[in-house]
Structure formats: structure tokens, C-alpha cells
Image 1 (cartoon, rainbow, N blue to C red):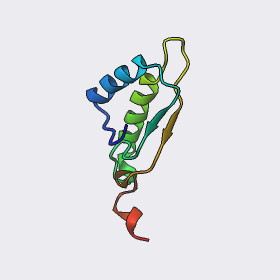
Image 2 (image 1 turned 30 degrees about the vertical axis):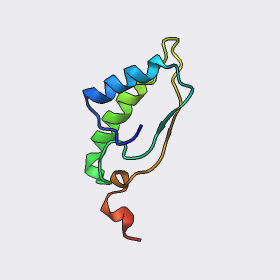
Image 3 (image 1 turned 60 degrees about the horizontal axis):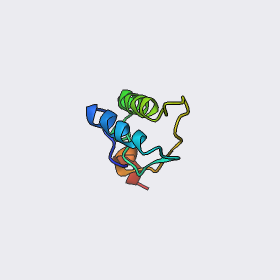
Length: 81
């Protein structure tokens, strides 16, 4: 997965993912689209909440999630150096 947006589509994607009984979920960047703005922390909180709920297997075990950093996670300041 990548380019994650906290909406109904993400919840549906997680329903599809869980049906395949994965051992790991990898998100290749752009988690939440907060663009590095501190005042947009609620977007990341909502995204992580959907991922946490959606990554729960029926037996109560959570699928581990590995992530990469994307350009929308860093914001413009992330490319200044």
C-alpha cells in the first residue's frame, strides 16, 4: 500500500487485506497526507486509528505494519537540505 488517505476507502482496503491473512503490512509512504504540518497531527491520528483497527486479525492479533517515508509525510521543508 501507499498514498494512504484516512477515509472509507482505507477501511475497505483494510477489509480486503485482512482476508488474505498477511503476516506483514507494508506502507510505502505518504501516510496520512499531513504534509509535515504539525497542526495536521489529527490526520495522522485518524489514519493510524483506521490502520490499527483494520489490521486486527479475527483472533485478536494485530498484523505488524512497516512503513516508509513519502514526500507528503515530510512536507516541503523535508526537501530543503
